[in-house]
Image 1 (cartoon, rainbow, N blue to C red):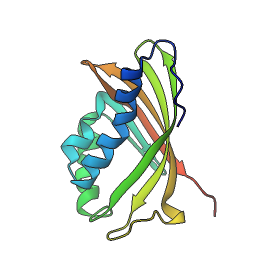
Image 2: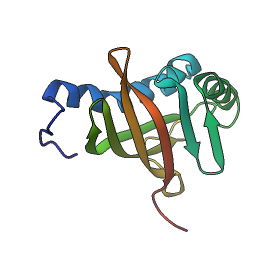
Image 3: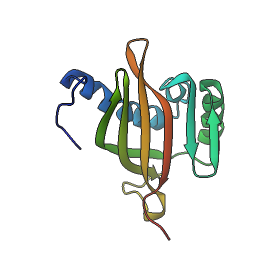
Length: 139
């Protein structure tokens, strides 16, 4: 991960930003759709391949359904690879990771992703305005 200190982003703020992916991993590990949705601002957007979900309530509903079906028993992994301040109260985080099938400890090549996170400072904490991911490998 890029670790240099950025103008307008103190080391403490940089650490708070980098902690958001860890909170997503924790929420996913518990299959907690409420905690997952709480990572987003009220009108946040989540884009996955073939999917566009707008608003915290819609994200919560999507994840509750997904945890009961296609993501049942899964966990996720990921780590920040770069943090890019965009302006006061806004930052982009780039991550690599993926969805781990039940019982697996390595992300299958077909499930490996890169993601872009646009975070904004909201209610004194960093929250997702936009989350988007795409496959890390083609084929």
